[in-house]
Length: 580
Ligand SMILES: [Zn+2]
Image (cartoon, rainbow, N blue to C red):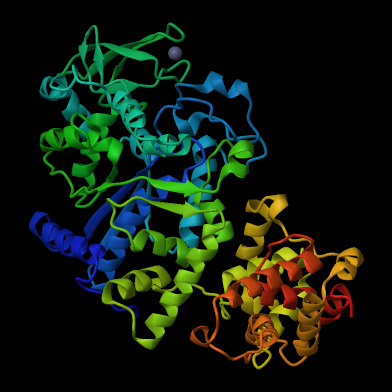
């Protein structure tokens, strides 16, 4: 069983606060934390913070032995607002569904799912399972259409004047949508971040004001199913409501006490659900936290429903680096599934666990991922030998598992950059990859590539999808005879020294020693000489020696780390390319 890591990091401190608050509000009841996601299109990787923040807190609470529910509210009864770019299997004809609930819009062509919302939810649910996120999913379509919120809706209609008065305080101020644009002007924000900022709930949505008065409820039209409707009359005693649709001209009078095809406007819907579910912790993105925003207004509306505002830290944007290649083909929408193709779930969990919600960070799809993995492996080694700091141990512990146990891990976690280089050079030839990886440490050869999986698969996917063609490594087929012939005496000697040492040094450590040692030996020092015994010129000699080897092996002046490259190329081919 995973241990609690009390009071060592931000997660622990929120857990303390949330447990205490939950005991105060609902003694003896399970702690309730919540996230909201809108399946209006591919769920952006940036929105994962909406789930990971309460997940980590819920997990800590569970580790301490408390009952906790993490609700994920699927805002699938929200209106379909626009046809997103970069989604395959759709065309402009999907625009005819704008205004319908997301669950009434057809899924993209070829989807196995019954509708638009289910299609995009399914991808997120699969990623959350891989990440070890335990949650109770609540479909708002199911809640509203089953009449679960009947009392709350009638109550909101009865108290519409009070709600209207609260909302009126903010109507003269810029709408959230405008504020978002202002923020974008103040600091550079890329499109992907703006996408992410939309998050859950319709920013800048109609708050229920109309010429016939204020009504916090909006029906979906009984004829066209769209929400271009206006409530024109409502009778509190009979609950008779008349609405008209501006899209198709339809109008009808229904009894709201029996009617299940509509929803509360977002700014009323959200606090209603805080009260309905007894939510104690629900963070929100910066766009929901400014004055007049839904979180802030929700705090004033929630007492009408007999509830209290949850503890709701604001979380900062999560950026993405190195998505240029995908942006052009996929509409710039990396999803959690895209990240999980190139990194293990532990690494992705760690990125969220180690940063406080108000700190922004970037998820690397570029070369930075290799450095990140080096850092992660170094941390794992420190945790194993007991030298890691308590805060780092806490983040590590949250990354590798949950209260339910450890996440499946790679049995032999070889360095990601080595795996990436091997995948790069072997280009899908698994037998070659296995041979090279076995030679990294001849005392502990791999018996199967599976021992290096899934990390190997992630590194291979990264090489194949995120490394531009001009940065891929192509090993020469034939020796560069012109270059070999033109070498001066010292260069020839350095190549000779390398060839002579190859057999004896054929391992990752051995070859590292050899390639750094050759220039030392040539300058009259021992191959074991440390930096303090050597003149600074040795560094220059090493650099030119490495450049020469890269030219002879891959026809460029840089490439993957040389020891890895040599192992990957194989001893026989190295000898041939170096002119033996
Ligand atoms: Zn209509």
